[in-house]
Length: 177
Image (cartoon, rainbow, N blue to C red; front, side, top):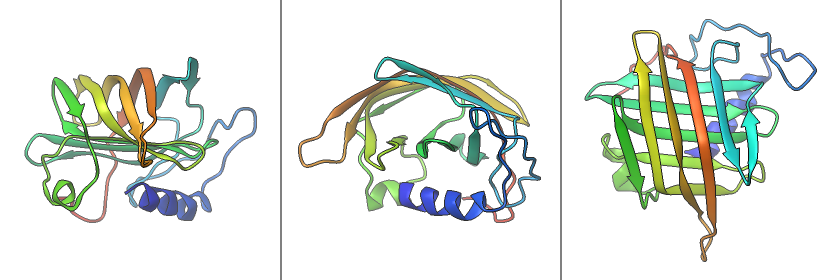
């Protein structure tokens, strides 16, 4: 999943324009391909004690799916960090001991929390809480925090706290199930 995100990001970034000064983006998009690099969203988090306010955010996809599910995938453009959530579209969702598998891929109700670091290392939600604080027809806002584990043979924990997002829904040419 995260590899696909990186490929999607690499392909789509060829057509986006970024300004200097901290990677702030002034590009606009009609979201017809599902992604957006415009300034209509915000995303922040604290990792290793460092607060990160993403200045150049690529919105791979934010979709309100059938069955009360929400899919969020975003990339911090300058660092190539990727966050991916599959959660309930209301209230609090807790992701416990998530590990990608074929059954999770086919189960559209599986709660997921994934993070790919700037070193392209994958981490999976071991105990992550995501709270939807606001949702309407055009955007979703919320918070997240918790512990992720690396996909190493001996998993290494990573704490990500004080996460927040306010993101527009993306349009897609293809129907998402």
